[in-house]
Length: 481
Image 1 (cartoon, rainbow, N blue to C red):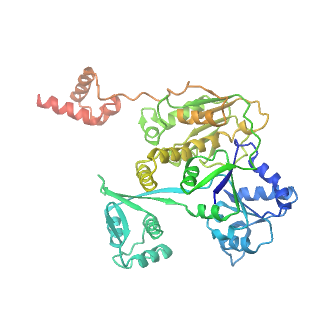
Image 2 (image 1 turned 30 degrees about the vertical axis):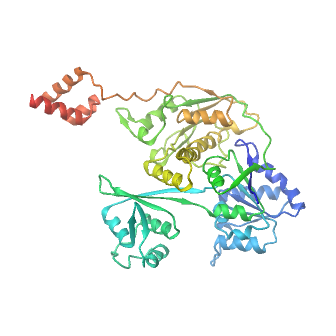
Image 3 (image 1 turned 90 degrees about the horizontal axis):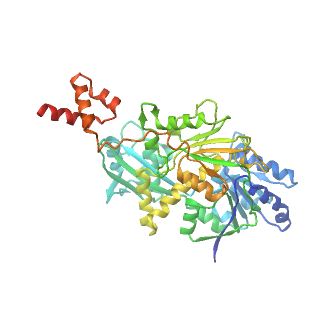
């Protein structure tokens, strides 16, 4: 039996949810029973109102509907509703339906609005003390961590109650990171550990695959996923688990954004927007702040702004700040400018996790890295820039989008912004990093002169950009001459 997922793809604002809602009366006449899983409770409330407006009854099952003293867990209520409920339309969050008994979905059509999360990449750095505590209960074999014989009951107690160590424990509680590692090991996830690094810490990393989705999709009578693009990690892991895709009956009519759009990449061609590059400091401050100032200096309105938490830009004045995950947020659809300053490149630990997946499934490493970047950088960038007036039918205002780099610009143009113009005017805003491997001999004399004047190595480094290691080497060479 073929395992199918029906995909309803359409540009943000094209009416995927509305197309699905308009089909509900016909489906009800056919006797269908439907579960609609949405990313947030706020979207459940919105969809509930829209279903009511077309004259249909539905039941929402989420934490906001139970305010009594004896609250029943949402998953329990959802399992019961799937088994006994007379309502033909149930509304819930993706998080809730992902945890139900898969067999409960038999006889139901499942509609998932927006791509659900199917994998998490986890890493922690443990100091020597906590590593030793971990290894009292775990054993290290070929860079993998395994539960020692006779210790599984201890780990279960730690995870369920957060209690102190039973054997070899101290009076302090376990960290959330340690408890999460124990939880993953109890779920039989592969957990790896690296050698001691220069700071004396050890990196522990693991991949948590949310496999219950594939059991749920297999059990439901029919599965439809509504998204701008069914790509990235969702598509890759669905294929790994044997699913194929076909077009959904809920696919909205094709169309294009017709307003004038200009995309401004903020780093030069061939370069990548990255945390390492953006947090680097020059005389003008962090590179990230310089990029933001450049964009703001060239806006003519109050733009939308989105960045990673490490950017610490959420208190920026004269912008509408949005979190990186802003799907379904439509109250800024009058905005004509947006500044995307979040990254999505895999870290060193992420790359180790991607390598473990490539080995586990016998697939090329690049397929996992490309899926990672699509899911964490490219698709979120598309979702963010289309929070603007670009999504409004008939909009004729010019839209200006300041984006991270060439990869994002190409993805936007290659998906739904085919008519956009890419303008590189601001891509040279960051100072060119000097190749310090080829230093002008005259600069050596300048440094030696400054040293002779009693200037400190740190100050010379700040004023010349020459590394303290090189300054110290030249100083030692001068003294030895």
